[in-house]
Length: 444
Ligand code: BES
Ligand code: MN
Image (tube, rainbow, N blue to C red; front, side, top):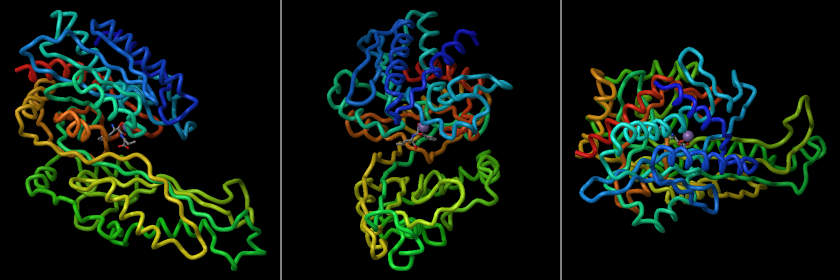
């Protein structure tokens, strides 16, 4: 690999483009400007589109009639670096240790989307053009639910007209194992606030006479699951499509399962919905997760207080054919029913995205798999679904009427969203290789 490719990635990573944090707004914009500059430098026509949130970057070659039009989607925003003191190196100062790049965004998604950009750059340099009509669509709000992208798609339907979409923002089941992902879970997010007394209270003077909001939030959160790991919200599983027999059989043979999940997560024992393997639980079954819960005194030592309020942040991962709005309504009814007496519950609905599934054996699906075979010669291909969400993928289908191919390069231990996020240099290089093979196969 050229040193300049790694220099480009490091420059891209150094922007702390954390989309959820208002203090990083200018950093996100600067990152978009850098990216547009890079896309221009490789010979494409790039544009930055302002939105009510963070900008969207697009780029295209000169489109010619008679060629397939391929859109490559990715995101340049990243998750917060919190807890920052658990990083070995500062999160926005990328380093290579033992062939692995460590930094926030290295895997999710800067290393992967830049692989496509640099792949196109190499092809253009060598051959003058790529073999397809190309559209890059790279947004800055994926990690906050792609709030402004749907309106952009609707307003620019003609500009974004394409035959197929490709994304590298998913995983590989193991090192050097080409992986084609044909399904993603959807997501529905909400925040809970419970309140009781009009002010914090002395827990000696009033303890016993009022319901404690911290106890209430714990009870409400605990009501989400049964002891068998199933979500206890009535009707939650109504629209869930059962796993197919072929998937269950194929997934058992993958070089990824309980042992790998246990080792990466470091838990003493795996736990989940009864009746399913752990890959089935994460890829094809819906869940309820508590992402945060707080209230009351968090400082050192003891403080005898009854807090006047307490909070929780929840997300639900959804599978075909669950609908975020329907699930939210069922959850709301359930939570209201489980709110203890003496407590007010406020629910703020957050972002959501629909689950996605595509036919892995479509013509484009097969082309993508041939490209993976070219990029990873002699290696057996894994056909999987994934537990993560890319909210816009189902919207692409609904608004543009186009299917998406998911060809990700993240490893199970990439630590996406966590301290010491990392991406092997080898995967970065594979991504550049994969781009070329992909565009050649999709052009056929
Ligand atoms: N790249 C991930 C999605 C992903 C991760 C897909 C692992 C497959 C396997 C993406 O950047 C992401 O993290 N999405 C968020 C979306 C949410 C914030 C709306 C997610 O899944 O939590
Ligand atoms: Mn992510």
